[in-house]
Amino acid sequence: LVCFRLKVKLDGGPRATPSLSSQGNGNKLTEKLLTSINDSGQIHVTQAMVNEMFIIRFALCAPNASEYDMHLAFQIIQT
Image 1 (cartoon, rainbow, N blue to C red):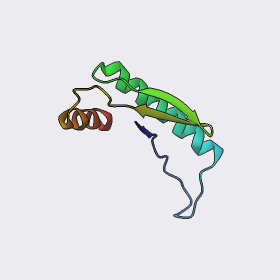
Image 2 (cartoon, one colour):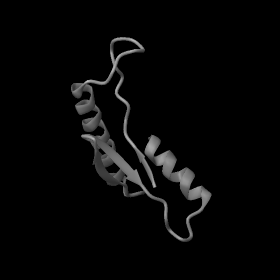
Image 3 (spheres, helix red, strand yellow):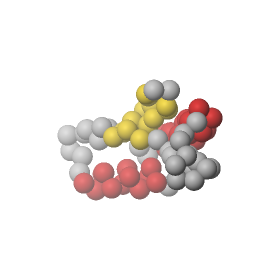
Image 4 (tube, helix red, strand yellow):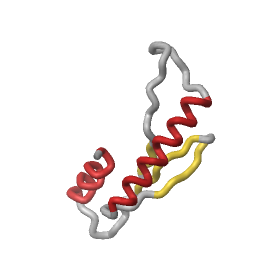
């Protein structure tokens, strides 16, 4: 199981901390990514909320899953 979300670029330099506003934008962007991935029909991912952060959950648990399947899924998620 791999859980991830999109990282929102913060203004304010390297010491900037995420605000609720940037967290909300990250939630919206991550949700759009999830929808895009699932709408492609190539792989299926699920969602969860952790500390008010929307995250994508991906599990590769088919008994016959291969390393190729992992790389293909990663490629789909990146595009």
